[in-house]
Length: 329
Image (cartoon, rainbow, N blue to C red; front, top):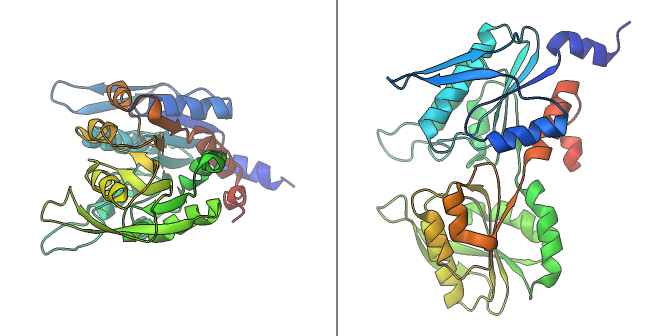
């Protein structure tokens, strides 16, 4: 009688890794962890901006993983993801998993105004319609986005990448406190505070008519003469963080460490952050940071890789073993 592992091999076959063009370094790191080569594929953009994908070998019956973050250029990267998935589907892949470290349109998760879309749901529907059987991602902006998918998935937390670095950093801090960039991040902020055994404070902010630049108003909690760990899930334009750092300094904060999972850094965000009195910017590589933006932040930028974690999750998914056990869950 075949073992469960042998049965699994019959169902899904061997791991096949395919990378889009969005994050080649991360894709290679995942491949190196698994001791595999990235599978050959051609991605061509025609003069009319249409994309063409062709696989260089058959994937019939294999367990395929498409690694593609959906940061800038968002629509090019999203279409690459969808076309790669459909190409694998039409070549009779045994199972297809969309590995999307950063999922675009995460902020469009509800109808909070009349006559607006829920684009996060549309993106989830498109990934499923393209042929994905599973998905993997990090730190969705809102938990309900998981419910937009009709397929199973692993929503991983950047906290598990950041925590070891923060534990090493903590002894050098003076009377540290965790501060969340807004009240909506308070629950996740508590996880950081519990890890580091610190107090927790919040920034209360009121959104203006400009939805990309919410105005920070005040601090709830004691931060005077404390080193601050300012945490959030992502930084886009940097507007919220500029206001946050200014209000923290006005309330007597000492050194400020900015901690975030997704370094979107749109437009001149890196330049704006570089001008702030922040000691370190601690993030991950769910989104690749271009060299010119890295240059603004210099040696204050610490980028922790998600590659080994994703590699381990992919291996466990292929073997049919628990992912939660990695985090004692």
